[in-house]
Image (cartoon, rainbow, N blue to C red; front, side):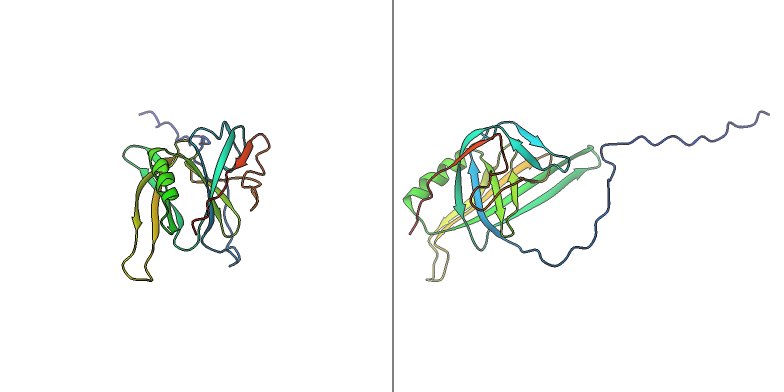
Length: 198
């Protein structure tokens, strides 16, 4: 009887999903929360340049961005949805926003926001900038306009914007408190005038 063929170990093929490194435990100097949210009409960012860590290193659009100051109950959360059965993965980016005071101007503007699907740059309290809805935009999927019942209750708006993307919210390089798009050298970004709800 012939001897069985020797076992041959197959050479590993590098895949795009192979890990590239580990992670140390960081210092406890991070802070939570959102400082500002910057909205851009869908499609106006132009062509995005994606870096090796999925960060946005440049964009080519000419656009106006609309800044909302927020504080308190606003947050960004990303839910990872990965299907073993279907071999798919996507990232559900959920932005929850609370805005104080009801105004006729905000009624109109938030209606337009619900009609559209803007791109959103979220500015954290440690001045990191994260792009929500980079490819597909962010849809308003829920919200309320509330008067409150007691004197200490919220008088204002709550909004939920949801984006389904192939990446987590990408860091935007070079943003500053004065200009979230300062690092985008090929973009022409102009800030609109902020409304004063008081």
